[in-house]
Image (cartoon, rainbow, N blue to C red; front, side, top):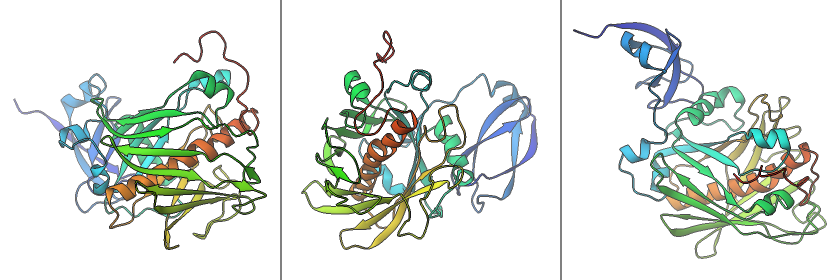
Length: 352
């Protein structure tokens, strides 16, 4: 007997391009995953067929996480980055951290931005809504830092960790490593003494290292912090600048990322000083962790970049996440700047 189906119209969400996937609510209270058809774009209305039988089973049959790379037989490493226009990185809120104020292990989902997508210089929460949904439902890769409890609680801004990016089968594709480097005079951008750094490897091979530029008396400029990435030979590749007031890309960083100004822009230049598409930290909307307790990061990959170059951009943005954005979260939680991390955890809260 042929399966009955019904038609319904849906609108392609912002941030979803041809070939991208998104979720729709279907009759019966379930959800279904839809692939954006050829010729369609964000904001357009398309017609889909929904099997009646699927309505009854949509909720009962969960979709496995992170199976895209496994089903495509993509080998471990960073070559998969060549297929995408960029990456969207979402930090998952930790309820234990919200309730106790104790620093827990950060968790992230990595979602591809399909090739051909026009990424705005200042994306907002509306543009990223589809990507946030996909990151929560079926990300490309997931990551969780493996770090020491005492470092997270006492020195969260300097903590060392290893963080592999895994698919749904547990296969490592890219791994971040950050050494613990305490800085007793850490007061950026006015004063930093010990260089914070993060290295990245792909398929077990070192790819790049990202470092924060250090110095005394506003070495990197007033209200500005600077980071640099180096390839595996030690050659400088990119410079990242994040200014609290303005951006070389033309935007304003005042009050960003908040509901008043949703995009915090990170200016990126290559070794020749050419301005590249910026990176962004986007206001996620209100949540129980506060206005800035959950990261939404947009990274753009310019055409022609190699897989290692794209990985270097990712390394630079992730070091900014664990320094600049982490410091803002600490300040919001009244833990102070520098290395302060609040009080000690109760019982075994941090053994996660």
